[in-house]
Image 1 (cartoon, rainbow, N blue to C red):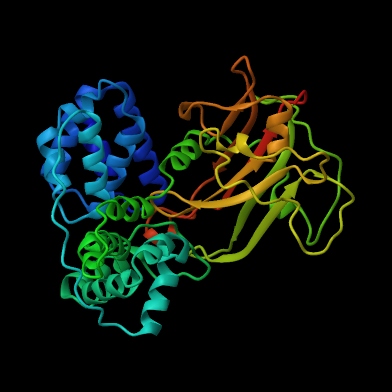
Image 2: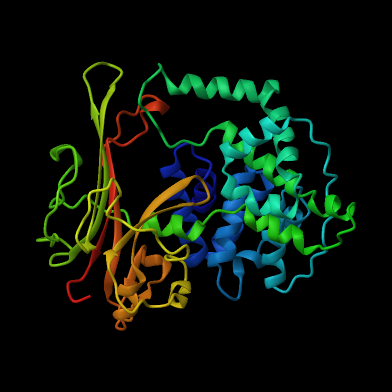
Length: 421
């Protein structure tokens, strides 16, 4: 069963493999719903990890189409998820069932427990997970982070977690300096599990304070979800590195100014490079492939005289730039000056992801619209033709023998626009 295998691959260690598997899940939901429904039943019945379960249900919610064959074929299994103690997963399961016309009772709220960690520990854990991700949960329920931290500290001290981490560390191989492999570890999985089980106690905790609102569970559960659509679009936008772009290692230190670059060949021949961001590792000699240098490049088109004040030639993107058409609500300035492209970061289902985006003034002036998810990070004109695209690439890994080697030696992204745009 290929779709069941793809669901299981979402539980891979490397983030890129997880995203590729999530893309396969998206394709199964969209184009082979009946077969994918059977795979979903198998996955749920075999107790897939909570992070995998949540991602798959989020993809089903976002991409399943009427008459909802994926949901209809797995009603009993989704009902079991709706009663589990994982807040985001059960919120998603209830949503899917109700959308398909199935009445679902609200499950009982878990008892919230007692916080047993210090304020300093809670702050450290919050920083490690990400304050932005936990901010909504803390706003709804001020005790959420201390309770979540208590759950996590208890799990981290368990013999099972220690054994899992020892196995993972052995797979990393010898100590390697300068490595930052994008990997999902048992610690990451335990964080998700504690976030989910802690969140499932929000209704009981607030009820003790006299707040009776079943809707808080939905809000909290959804606040813990990542931007799954952005992850799918970025994966679909992978390409071969454009040969006309300068590599970071070929450029000297500091800032240089040049006219805008026009692509001379390939799929985007004649298009203008609005922005380019890239990292290149320099690998030294030796069996352990030491990282001896790291070259980083940031480039962008700026509509004003450039002042080398240490800043990047890139702006800040609108928070919903690559999501539906929310960016259309942005007011158009009477005049424009500054970077025409922006560099942004979001969290998808697995980790932080980086992207480039055009300034909304380009989109409004040329009447562009966001392309369907299947076309990746792309804006199209009124005829549906590509007008602005963001592509990304990776080159060979440092190595494949150990987990610490699962890092590309060169990776980057670029934003292109048609010359007439």
